[in-house]
Image 1 (tube, helix red, strand yellow):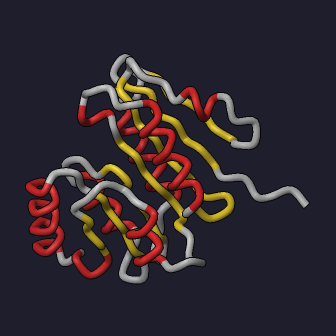
Image 2 (cartoon, one colour):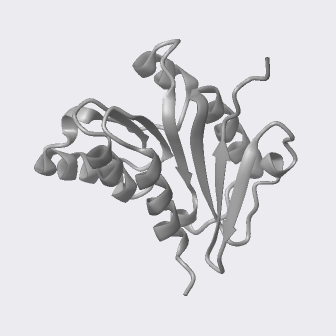
Image 3 (cartoon, one colour):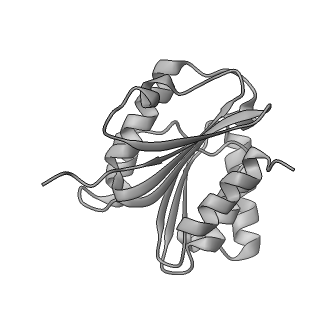
Length: 172
């Protein structure tokens, strides 16, 4: 039996996110992962989720409130951007984990836009932090596959390609 990409992502996130973690969800989609992440970071952690669709953001806010998780979650009803990240995290705070889940949309995303979001999230990630990128099966993250200074792995199923990218500590 092969794990679905969503179960694989959930296992990876549950392994990395704990009380006090800072997590950025760069493409929140339906908000399902937002609720999971908000429960995992605990009362001392923070989830910052970017939603392209207002209805999904509002539904997620309502669900977080009902679960008592709204205090640890910042919902942005806009595309992922450096200004919002800097405003919320400051110039020096970095995230432990970041997630970009494009597979739930089902549509192929522009490679340049994905590469730009990956680069942006890597710049806001701690050294040895984890970036998870989930793409439809018909799309690969070729920009990452060509980077020599990133540690990455790909989990591929018939539905999606999931990348785990670890930000490397700078060599001395």
